[in-house]
Length: 255
Image (cartoon, rainbow, N blue to C red; front, top):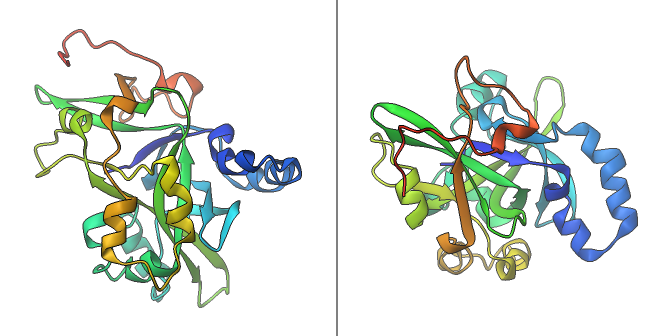
């Protein structure tokens, strides 16, 4: 699963900065960033924040999208609200089968750049949040899907996205140990050499077998993790910069 993330301006600009297009970076900063909820030092997908995504139809310039994919076939806002929290993530194993995702996997793919993500570890009937990020502190490129939905009553357009998840690596197997789950999960992190292929593969050529090549389990030796402040409940400090900093829980043994 991936329901909690950290996303700053710098991470969201990664793909545009790679091209060295200063005019584009300035336009993104001045026109798009103000339309988002950035910076998100901690954001829950259940609050449906707005971020920047890079799509296969416009791979080098981002658009603003809301977290929680709304399929085109949604009839009204009531149906949207009943579905929304169930489309924050999309399991890679069932993308071609699920009604909410099977059109997007073929025609509407995207990348979401984040600083890191949070996951909860269960120990002695308590949960402890971990922050997971790259050792080199570079942004993580998450494979995603997006959709465009038009409200039939207001005509308003909503661009939305879902983060693809896959089986957890060894690190995530230790951290993401919820007794309610059969296996650990983690966001599908694209290797840098696969980013362009994820966005640029022809719509009609993308098959199930391509996913096995493009979305692989990200090596745990490239990631780091540490415990942080509580992300839920009365002690949750909110979207503050220090939320991703190390917090020691003496009772927690984790190696």
